[in-house]
Length: 257
Image (tube, rainbow, N blue to C red):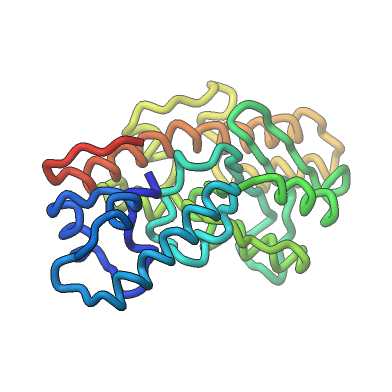
């Protein structure tokens, strides 16, 4: 779908992009092949042609980082179907303070398998960094406000330079408000009965039980809670992507993806 997007071009916003679509220019190739664009100078057209060819080259190479720089964060959702290596990520902590709280669990889900990093067991900066470097797209829920800055504060060498789809803010654009659990209920995304009633505060208590009493059941429940968080991000991302695509491209034209 990224090849239907013109907002990677300098000076092209939503209104101009819509104008291109209305004039039958629905993708990069059609733009490049078009000799003249209404109300656009030849110089600007040539510049845009070069930028689109450059973007195609980066897309062909699977370089998602290029689009993290050229596309505004609120539009990163448009890349969701263009790259296969997607990281669904969520963290658990002992509190909300970046300075006083610690990360207890980090869950990473690639759409098929879950990897769990636990403080004091296998959560190390080098290992986590190596894992995150495997991916092209990051998907979180309020991760831009909490998860990623928390991780960067604790692990300074980790950089989040790939496109980041924050479902909290993407969801608000289609009327989905509130926390992750509330949105899941609205959309009919279910959780296992063992963790249905658990929230962030209970997650802290579970961690304390593990640390103070070595309560393995508490740790297993916390890990399962985190696992449900990241696994549920995938169906939520699919729903939000579908609705945003319809809202954005519902202009009487058909697009191929």
